[in-house]
Length: 239
Image (cartoon, rainbow, N blue to C red; front, side, top):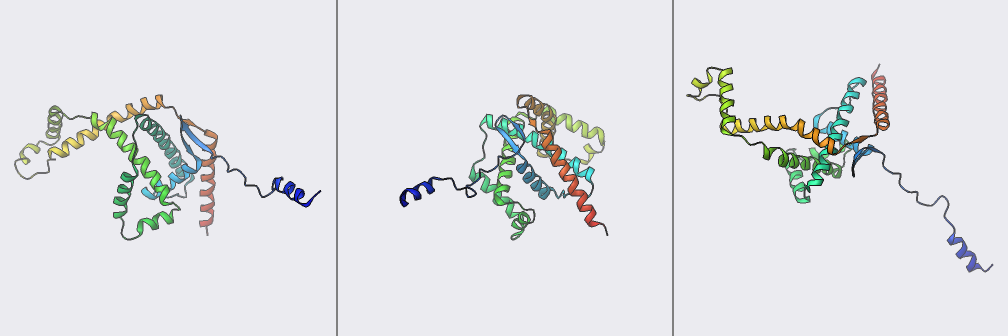
């Protein structure tokens, strides 16, 4: 066989051991419609949650199990809200995201923010992704609940009556410089109360509209891995 033909035949053969293997498919933890949360995203969001709240992994396996179980439920609710926001066409632009990120960074001196990301093994892009989700949900809640939580004069009057009933001196103190809340503070408080009261019914209806499928087997494995990690840390701490 001519040398050129041999060379062409060799080049046409698959390179065993050198072929690029297809990337493994992300393991989905939960989904609703096209919205999904993978195991990697769950762990990323959990790290960011710990960084934001200071809720580090403790030495109590039962407590850690409860924290992660509750966090998984929060992510399920998040999926529902994002699915509804997507249906309504609610989006956060890159400009809005950058402005919010810059405002957050200004709350930290020097490079403390970047150092916190590094210590928690969180990239800036991962933080941006989580921030975009939070802003999207905030805008959804504002659109669906806050704008519908109108406060009437009767609401304010009932609030003041209740305040005076609980503290008879409120009316007299109002004559002087007292601690009676301002009109704006009263309206803000009443609106928050209305939103909180409406939220449970609202999210319950959305869960029916956007049911979430949770891979219970995968979730149990995550929780079991966490428990084993806690036991290992506890053993290492023993003298």
